[in-house]
Length: 98
Length: 252
Image (tube, rainbow over all chains, first blue to last red):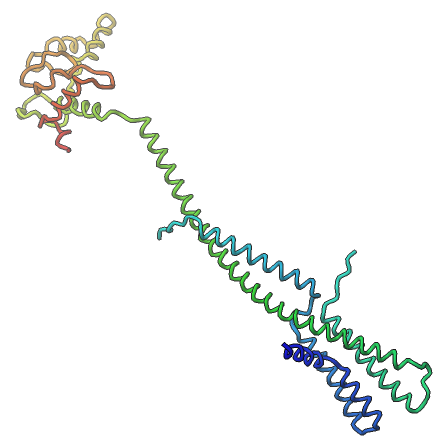
Protein backbone atom coordinates (compact mmCIF):
# COMPACT_ATOMS: atom_id res chain seq x y z
CA UNK A 1 0.00 0.00 0.00
CA UNK A 2 2.86 2.33 0.73
CA UNK A 3 4.22 1.74 -2.76
CA UNK A 4 1.19 3.25 -4.39
CA UNK A 5 1.34 6.66 -2.71
CA UNK A 6 5.06 6.90 -3.47
CA UNK A 7 4.37 6.13 -7.09
CA UNK A 8 1.67 8.77 -7.07
CA UNK A 9 4.03 11.21 -5.46
CA UNK A 10 6.65 10.38 -8.07
CA UNK A 11 4.12 11.09 -10.79
CA UNK A 12 3.28 14.39 -9.13
CA UNK A 13 6.89 15.31 -8.98
CA UNK A 14 7.19 14.60 -12.68
CA UNK A 15 4.80 17.43 -13.39
CA UNK A 16 6.13 19.81 -10.77
CA UNK A 17 8.48 22.55 -11.91
CA UNK A 18 9.51 23.55 -8.39
CA UNK A 19 12.50 21.18 -8.18
CA UNK A 20 13.94 22.77 -11.30
CA UNK A 21 13.38 26.29 -9.93
CA UNK A 22 15.00 25.16 -6.70
CA UNK A 23 18.02 23.88 -8.60
CA UNK A 24 18.35 27.20 -10.41
CA UNK A 25 18.22 29.15 -7.15
CA UNK A 26 20.82 26.85 -5.60
CA UNK A 27 23.15 27.39 -8.51
CA UNK A 28 22.62 31.13 -8.25
CA UNK A 29 23.52 30.97 -4.58
CA UNK A 30 26.69 29.06 -5.34
CA UNK A 31 27.46 31.30 -8.29
CA UNK A 32 27.88 28.15 -10.30
CA UNK A 33 28.38 28.11 -14.03
CA UNK A 34 25.53 25.58 -14.28
CA UNK A 35 22.93 28.31 -13.86
CA UNK A 36 22.44 28.59 -17.60
CA UNK A 37 22.23 24.85 -17.90
CA UNK A 38 19.56 24.71 -15.25
CA UNK A 39 17.71 27.58 -16.88
CA UNK A 40 17.72 25.67 -20.17
CA UNK A 41 16.43 22.61 -18.37
CA UNK A 42 13.53 24.59 -17.00
CA UNK A 43 12.81 26.10 -20.39
CA UNK A 44 12.90 22.68 -22.08
CA UNK A 45 10.74 21.16 -19.37
CA UNK A 46 8.11 23.84 -19.86
CA UNK A 47 8.20 23.32 -23.62
CA UNK A 48 7.85 19.55 -23.25
CA UNK A 49 4.92 20.02 -20.90
CA UNK A 50 3.29 22.31 -23.44
CA UNK A 51 3.71 19.74 -26.23
CA UNK A 52 2.50 16.96 -23.98
CA UNK A 53 -0.63 18.91 -23.08
CA UNK A 54 -1.33 19.66 -26.76
CA UNK A 55 -1.06 15.97 -27.65
CA UNK A 56 -3.13 14.60 -24.76
CA UNK A 57 -6.46 13.17 -25.98
CA UNK A 58 -9.77 13.89 -24.40
CA UNK A 59 -8.99 17.23 -22.76
CA UNK A 60 -10.71 19.37 -25.37
CA UNK A 61 -13.71 19.54 -23.08
CA UNK A 62 -14.15 20.22 -19.43
CA UNK A 63 -14.51 17.16 -17.17
CA UNK A 64 -18.21 17.85 -16.66
CA UNK A 65 -18.90 18.06 -20.39
CA UNK A 66 -16.94 14.89 -20.97
CA UNK A 67 -18.84 13.04 -18.27
CA UNK A 68 -22.11 14.20 -19.79
CA UNK A 69 -21.02 12.94 -23.17
CA UNK A 70 -19.95 9.65 -21.64
CA UNK A 71 -23.34 9.21 -19.97
CA UNK A 72 -25.07 9.98 -23.26
CA UNK A 73 -22.99 7.38 -25.10
CA UNK A 74 -23.65 4.75 -22.45
CA UNK A 75 -27.37 5.47 -22.67
CA UNK A 76 -27.24 5.20 -26.47
CA UNK A 77 -25.53 1.84 -26.31
CA UNK A 78 -28.00 0.59 -23.74
CA UNK A 79 -31.02 1.76 -25.76
CA UNK A 80 -29.73 0.28 -29.00
CA UNK A 81 -28.96 -3.01 -27.30
CA UNK A 82 -32.50 -3.13 -25.99
CA UNK A 83 -33.93 -2.30 -29.41
CA UNK A 84 -31.91 -5.00 -31.10
CA UNK A 85 -32.86 -7.51 -28.44
CA UNK A 86 -36.52 -6.63 -28.96
CA UNK A 87 -36.33 -7.02 -32.75
CA UNK A 88 -34.38 -10.25 -32.59
CA UNK A 89 -36.84 -11.79 -30.16
CA UNK A 90 -39.80 -11.09 -32.48
CA UNK A 91 -41.42 -13.96 -34.35
CA UNK A 92 -39.11 -14.49 -37.27
CA UNK A 93 -39.97 -16.29 -40.44
CA UNK A 94 -37.88 -17.36 -43.36
CA UNK A 95 -38.08 -15.09 -46.34
CA UNK A 96 -38.49 -17.39 -49.34
CA UNK A 97 -36.02 -16.96 -52.15
CA UNK A 98 -37.69 -15.53 -55.24
CA UNK B 1 -26.56 32.94 -18.65
CA UNK B 2 -24.35 29.92 -18.20
CA UNK B 3 -20.69 30.50 -18.85
CA UNK B 4 -19.15 27.83 -20.96
CA UNK B 5 -16.49 26.10 -18.93
CA UNK B 6 -12.96 26.28 -20.19
CA UNK B 7 -11.56 23.02 -21.41
CA UNK B 8 -8.89 21.27 -19.40
CA UNK B 9 -6.38 21.91 -22.15
CA UNK B 10 -6.93 25.66 -22.02
CA UNK B 11 -6.59 25.70 -18.25
CA UNK B 12 -3.41 23.63 -18.34
CA UNK B 13 -1.79 25.86 -20.92
CA UNK B 14 -2.83 28.93 -19.01
CA UNK B 15 -1.36 27.61 -15.75
CA UNK B 16 1.81 26.58 -17.53
CA UNK B 17 2.21 30.07 -18.94
CA UNK B 18 1.72 31.47 -15.45
CA UNK B 19 4.36 29.11 -14.09
CA UNK B 20 6.80 30.18 -16.76
CA UNK B 21 6.22 33.86 -16.06
CA UNK B 22 6.36 33.47 -12.31
CA UNK B 23 9.52 31.36 -12.35
CA UNK B 24 11.22 33.89 -14.64
CA UNK B 25 10.21 36.77 -12.40
CA UNK B 26 11.39 34.97 -9.32
CA UNK B 27 14.76 34.25 -10.82
CA UNK B 28 15.12 37.84 -12.02
CA UNK B 29 14.20 39.22 -8.63
CA UNK B 30 16.61 36.92 -6.86
CA UNK B 31 19.35 37.84 -9.30
CA UNK B 32 18.55 41.54 -8.80
CA UNK B 33 18.48 41.23 -5.03
CA UNK B 34 22.12 40.21 -5.04
CA UNK B 35 23.27 43.44 -6.53
CA UNK B 36 20.78 45.92 -5.19
CA UNK B 37 18.00 46.37 -2.75
CA UNK B 38 14.55 45.27 -3.85
CA UNK B 39 12.16 48.17 -4.51
CA UNK B 40 9.34 46.19 -2.94
CA UNK B 41 10.47 44.03 -0.06
CA UNK B 42 8.64 40.76 0.29
CA UNK B 43 7.88 40.72 -3.41
CA UNK B 44 10.01 37.65 -3.92
CA UNK B 45 8.04 35.86 -1.20
CA UNK B 46 4.78 36.71 -2.87
CA UNK B 47 6.00 35.48 -6.21
CA UNK B 48 7.26 32.30 -4.59
CA UNK B 49 3.91 31.67 -2.96
CA UNK B 50 2.14 32.24 -6.25
CA UNK B 51 4.58 29.92 -7.94
CA UNK B 52 3.93 27.15 -5.42
CA UNK B 53 0.19 27.69 -5.75
CA UNK B 54 0.31 27.55 -9.52
CA UNK B 55 2.48 24.47 -9.41
CA UNK B 56 -0.02 22.65 -7.19
CA UNK B 57 -2.82 23.72 -9.51
CA UNK B 58 -0.84 22.43 -12.47
CA UNK B 59 -0.38 19.06 -10.82
CA UNK B 60 -4.05 18.77 -10.01
CA UNK B 61 -4.99 19.65 -13.57
CA UNK B 62 -2.59 17.03 -14.90
CA UNK B 63 -4.30 14.39 -12.74
CA UNK B 64 -7.66 15.51 -14.14
CA UNK B 65 -6.22 15.35 -17.65
CA UNK B 66 -5.11 11.77 -17.11
CA UNK B 67 -8.57 10.78 -15.90
CA UNK B 68 -10.09 12.47 -18.91
CA UNK B 69 -7.71 10.53 -21.12
CA UNK B 70 -9.01 7.25 -19.70
CA UNK B 71 -12.61 8.43 -20.08
CA UNK B 72 -11.79 9.33 -23.67
CA UNK B 73 -10.64 5.77 -24.32
CA UNK B 74 -13.88 4.44 -22.89
CA UNK B 75 -15.81 6.88 -25.08
CA UNK B 76 -14.01 5.63 -28.15
CA UNK B 77 -14.97 2.05 -27.31
CA UNK B 78 -18.56 3.12 -26.74
CA UNK B 79 -18.62 4.96 -30.06
CA UNK B 80 -17.47 1.80 -31.80
CA UNK B 81 -20.23 -0.11 -30.04
CA UNK B 82 -22.76 2.48 -31.18
CA UNK B 83 -21.53 2.20 -34.76
CA UNK B 84 -21.86 -1.56 -34.68
CA UNK B 85 -25.38 -1.36 -33.27
CA UNK B 86 -26.32 1.20 -35.91
CA UNK B 87 -25.19 -1.12 -38.70
CA UNK B 88 -27.12 -4.02 -37.10
CA UNK B 89 -30.25 -1.87 -36.92
CA UNK B 90 -29.83 -0.83 -40.54
CA UNK B 91 -29.47 -4.46 -41.58
CA UNK B 92 -32.64 -5.37 -39.69
CA UNK B 93 -34.40 -2.41 -41.24
CA UNK B 94 -33.51 -3.66 -44.73
CA UNK B 95 -34.80 -7.13 -43.92
CA UNK B 96 -38.02 -5.74 -42.48
CA UNK B 97 -38.54 -3.62 -45.56
CA UNK B 98 -38.05 -6.64 -47.78
CA UNK B 99 -40.46 -8.70 -45.69
CA UNK B 100 -43.02 -5.90 -45.80
CA UNK B 101 -42.77 -5.79 -49.58
CA UNK B 102 -43.24 -9.54 -49.87
CA UNK B 103 -46.18 -9.52 -47.47
CA UNK B 104 -47.83 -6.60 -49.25
CA UNK B 105 -47.55 -8.44 -52.58
CA UNK B 106 -48.94 -11.64 -51.07
CA UNK B 107 -51.86 -9.79 -49.44
CA UNK B 108 -52.66 -8.01 -52.69
CA UNK B 109 -52.66 -11.25 -54.66
CA UNK B 110 -54.79 -12.96 -52.03
CA UNK B 111 -57.32 -10.10 -52.18
CA UNK B 112 -57.47 -10.36 -55.95
CA UNK B 113 -58.06 -14.09 -55.67
CA UNK B 114 -60.83 -13.54 -53.14
CA UNK B 115 -62.46 -11.06 -55.49
CA UNK B 116 -62.32 -13.62 -58.31
CA UNK B 117 -63.81 -16.28 -56.03
CA UNK B 118 -66.64 -13.96 -55.01
CA UNK B 119 -67.30 -13.02 -58.61
CA UNK B 120 -67.40 -16.67 -59.65
CA UNK B 121 -69.66 -17.51 -56.73
CA UNK B 122 -72.18 -14.81 -57.72
CA UNK B 123 -72.36 -16.06 -61.27
CA UNK B 124 -72.34 -19.74 -60.40
CA UNK B 125 -74.48 -22.14 -62.35
CA UNK B 126 -75.44 -25.56 -61.14
CA UNK B 127 -73.33 -28.20 -62.80
CA UNK B 128 -76.36 -30.45 -62.99
CA UNK B 129 -78.19 -27.92 -65.14
CA UNK B 130 -75.26 -27.57 -67.46
CA UNK B 131 -75.08 -31.31 -67.83
CA UNK B 132 -78.82 -31.48 -68.48
CA UNK B 133 -78.64 -28.91 -71.24
CA UNK B 134 -75.63 -30.69 -72.66
CA UNK B 135 -77.64 -33.85 -72.80
CA UNK B 136 -80.51 -32.10 -74.50
CA UNK B 137 -78.24 -30.62 -77.10
CA UNK B 138 -76.67 -34.00 -77.69
CA UNK B 139 -80.06 -35.75 -77.73
CA UNK B 140 -81.32 -33.69 -80.67
CA UNK B 141 -78.47 -35.16 -82.74
CA UNK B 142 -76.93 -31.73 -83.15
CA UNK B 143 -73.39 -32.88 -82.40
CA UNK B 144 -73.41 -36.37 -83.82
CA UNK B 145 -75.42 -38.07 -86.55
CA UNK B 146 -77.87 -40.75 -85.47
CA UNK B 147 -76.61 -44.28 -85.71
CA UNK B 148 -79.07 -45.14 -88.48
CA UNK B 149 -78.36 -42.06 -90.57
CA UNK B 150 -77.52 -42.79 -94.19
CA UNK B 151 -76.85 -40.44 -97.07
CA UNK B 152 -80.17 -39.28 -98.40
CA UNK B 153 -81.67 -38.97 -94.97
CA UNK B 154 -83.27 -35.53 -94.85
CA UNK B 155 -82.41 -35.12 -91.19
CA UNK B 156 -79.77 -32.56 -90.42
CA UNK B 157 -77.90 -31.50 -87.26
CA UNK B 158 -79.57 -28.13 -87.56
CA UNK B 159 -83.24 -27.27 -87.88
CA UNK B 160 -84.16 -27.31 -91.51
CA UNK B 161 -86.46 -24.84 -93.19
CA UNK B 162 -89.44 -27.15 -92.98
CA UNK B 163 -88.79 -27.97 -89.37
CA UNK B 164 -88.61 -24.30 -88.44
CA UNK B 165 -91.88 -23.58 -90.16
CA UNK B 166 -93.55 -26.48 -88.50
CA UNK B 167 -92.39 -25.40 -85.07
CA UNK B 168 -94.03 -22.97 -82.64
CA UNK B 169 -92.47 -19.91 -84.15
CA UNK B 170 -93.61 -20.99 -87.58
CA UNK B 171 -97.19 -21.56 -86.34
CA UNK B 172 -97.20 -18.21 -84.58
CA UNK B 173 -95.98 -16.52 -87.70
CA UNK B 174 -98.68 -18.26 -89.76
CA UNK B 175 -101.38 -17.19 -87.34
CA UNK B 176 -100.30 -13.60 -87.46
CA UNK B 177 -100.01 -13.45 -91.27
CA UNK B 178 -103.04 -15.57 -92.26
CA UNK B 179 -105.58 -12.80 -92.22
CA UNK B 180 -103.12 -10.02 -92.96
CA UNK B 181 -101.40 -10.96 -96.12
CA UNK B 182 -100.97 -13.98 -98.25
CA UNK B 183 -97.34 -13.71 -98.74
CA UNK B 184 -96.59 -17.11 -97.64
CA UNK B 185 -99.44 -19.35 -98.66
CA UNK B 186 -97.14 -22.01 -99.79
CA UNK B 187 -95.34 -22.09 -96.48
CA UNK B 188 -98.56 -22.55 -94.57
CA UNK B 189 -99.58 -25.38 -96.92
CA UNK B 190 -96.13 -26.83 -96.72
CA UNK B 191 -96.22 -26.63 -92.97
CA UNK B 192 -99.52 -28.56 -92.93
CA UNK B 193 -98.50 -31.09 -95.51
CA UNK B 194 -95.38 -32.53 -94.01
CA UNK B 195 -95.44 -36.28 -94.24
CA UNK B 196 -95.39 -38.05 -90.97
CA UNK B 197 -92.02 -39.58 -91.54
CA UNK B 198 -90.46 -36.14 -91.85
CA UNK B 199 -92.32 -34.63 -88.94
CA UNK B 200 -89.65 -33.48 -86.62
CA UNK B 201 -89.71 -34.95 -83.17
CA UNK B 202 -88.39 -32.44 -80.76
CA UNK B 203 -88.43 -32.93 -77.03
CA UNK B 204 -90.43 -29.79 -76.42
CA UNK B 205 -93.25 -30.65 -78.90
CA UNK B 206 -94.85 -33.66 -77.26
CA UNK B 207 -94.26 -36.30 -74.71
CA UNK B 208 -95.07 -39.12 -77.16
CA UNK B 209 -91.68 -39.72 -78.59
CA UNK B 210 -91.22 -41.95 -81.62
CA UNK B 211 -89.44 -45.09 -80.66
CA UNK B 212 -86.54 -45.04 -83.05
CA UNK B 213 -85.59 -41.44 -82.77
CA UNK B 214 -84.48 -40.82 -79.26
CA UNK B 215 -83.19 -42.96 -76.49
CA UNK B 216 -86.04 -44.08 -74.26
CA UNK B 217 -84.36 -42.75 -71.12
CA UNK B 218 -84.87 -39.17 -72.20
CA UNK B 219 -88.65 -39.36 -72.24
CA UNK B 220 -89.21 -37.85 -68.84
CA UNK B 221 -86.90 -34.99 -69.23
CA UNK B 222 -88.34 -33.09 -72.20
CA UNK B 223 -90.20 -30.30 -70.48
CA UNK B 224 -88.31 -27.10 -70.15
CA UNK B 225 -87.60 -26.75 -66.52
CA UNK B 226 -86.81 -23.66 -64.58
CA UNK B 227 -83.38 -23.46 -63.14
CA UNK B 228 -82.87 -25.51 -60.02
CA UNK B 229 -83.27 -29.22 -59.60
CA UNK B 230 -85.37 -31.86 -57.92
CA UNK B 231 -84.80 -35.49 -57.18
CA UNK B 232 -86.61 -36.74 -60.31
CA UNK B 233 -84.40 -34.73 -62.56
CA UNK B 234 -81.38 -35.88 -60.70
CA UNK B 235 -82.33 -39.48 -61.49
CA UNK B 236 -82.85 -38.61 -65.13
CA UNK B 237 -79.58 -36.84 -65.19
CA UNK B 238 -77.83 -39.90 -63.84
CA UNK B 239 -79.56 -42.02 -66.45
CA UNK B 240 -78.65 -39.62 -69.20
CA UNK B 241 -75.10 -39.45 -68.08
CA UNK B 242 -74.74 -43.18 -68.44
CA UNK B 243 -75.95 -43.10 -72.06
CA UNK B 244 -73.04 -43.77 -74.34
CA UNK B 245 -74.53 -41.72 -77.21
CA UNK B 246 -74.15 -38.56 -75.19
CA UNK B 247 -71.01 -36.75 -76.15
CA UNK B 248 -70.72 -35.00 -72.83
CA UNK B 249 -70.08 -38.23 -71.03
CA UNK B 250 -67.35 -39.06 -73.51
CA UNK B 251 -65.51 -36.04 -72.48
CA UNK B 252 -64.88 -37.40 -68.96
